[in-house]
Length: 252
Image (cartoon, rainbow, N blue to C red; front, side, top):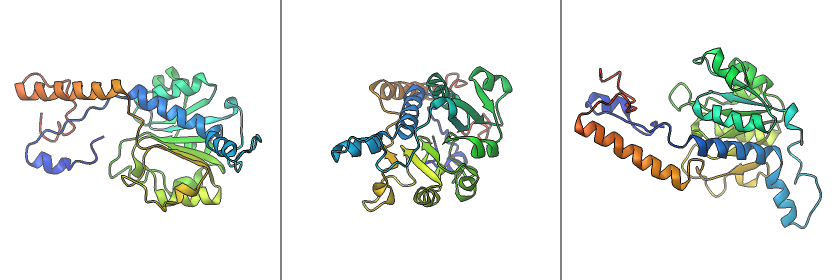
């Protein structure tokens, strides 16, 4: 992502803004898959049970009803390379897949065994929902009170994209009311959660520290690709394969 940079100001100054969009697809896809499985299987609450010397098979408490993957549908809001890879993992586990992405041809959905859907259809029909779109002014609080109201009662939400894709206050309200049964979050609206944040009191929320991208291999690949892009631009070589996010605005 490049949402932390003032791209319009850089463009005014003739500065090329470059991002590395495809260096950790496998890692984030696996992390998203892990959060989906952890939330749907009550792994956090079971761990809490055992730590309290409780070996019952109920949740602690039983926020999420255990269901077979074959009767569960994962809905992707955005279906780029990363969510498509994640959908392969979850399809292999037996989940049904549906996705909203108005920029893709039907053949892509067919290739990944995903039902092509409108945004409202995903919101209304999916049992697990994960937003997978870039963060920009149009997608800020992409998941909000209005969209949550359209979701099934007991829906699960997983986010490994950008924290501000979800209106955190709306999500907290929905978790407290039971409208959302559980959540798996790798990202938050701020860099860190305050010690008194409501998430810490919720056994139906699994939190990870923006770690979805992290492996030794992905970090090395990020460094390699970054260096390669800089060298290409500094040498004045063909930059057609460099992801210059303000290329059009600069007239390149």
